[in-house]
Amino acid sequence: MREDEKGSEGVVLTCPYCYRSTFKQTSDLRRHIRIHTGEKPFNCHHCSYSAVRREHLNDHLWRRHKIVAKKRSQTVVNLSL
Image (cartoon, rainbow, N blue to C red; front, side, top):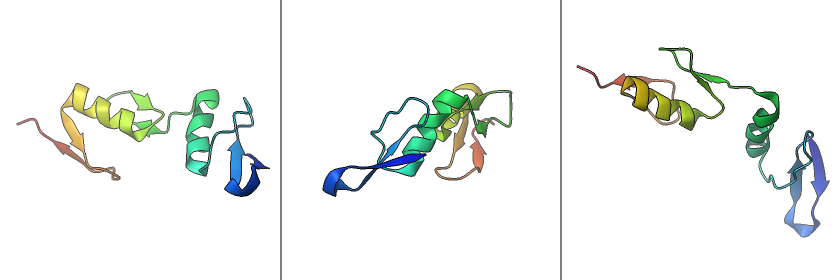
């Protein structure tokens, strides 16, 4: 990760793959880099689905398995009776 100075606004992070430099937070740059690397760190425990973002996994859990995931946690609640 390369850092470029941008005047008095602070540091702007630059993608080492495409040189996009609109990232102000390291987490945003990390998430963006997954586009280039193909990394999908969030895996469904019920099927083979994997996602780049946790929100996408949570959407999948609801749509496919009717499971609601708690925010910021790996704990899930199954709504099927």
